[in-house]
Length: 157
Image (tube, rainbow, N blue to C red; front, side, top):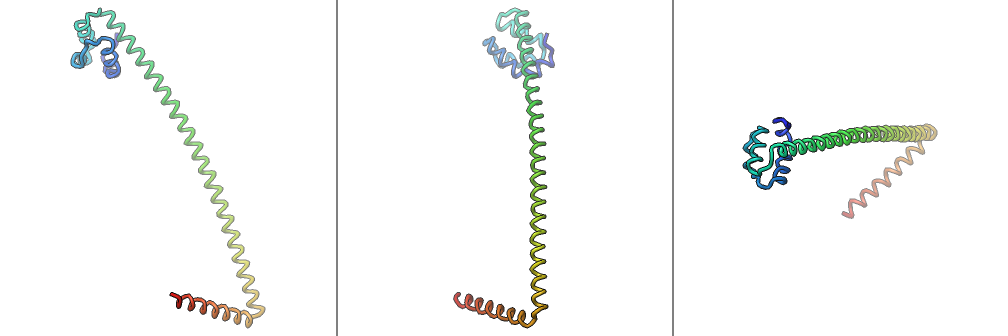
């Protein structure tokens, strides 16, 4: 026989099935039993004329199907949760690999730029040491040209 706790736990599902089987049962009839299995069976007997054994067998059948369905759903949810956990782990690993690769690439590019800037600085220092007067003249000429270009740009506005 179905217990009170089992009925309460699956009540919404079972209520609909009972009303499908015995259309004479109203919402009010089914709400009055308050979890008492004997009272529910008695109400169904009184309203439908069905025998007690028939009603109890039907409740057992409904409850058994409900449990197996719930177990199947529970197993499926567990399976999907494990798959989601696996996918999350794979995604995390992929992101970590990508970030590590990007970090290494940026470090290499930084080192290349730093090396090129140092080489340019060293070359400029060498040129200034060898020919300080020519370097000064070139710097003065470059400054003069930059000043003329800036002043022309400002006049056009």
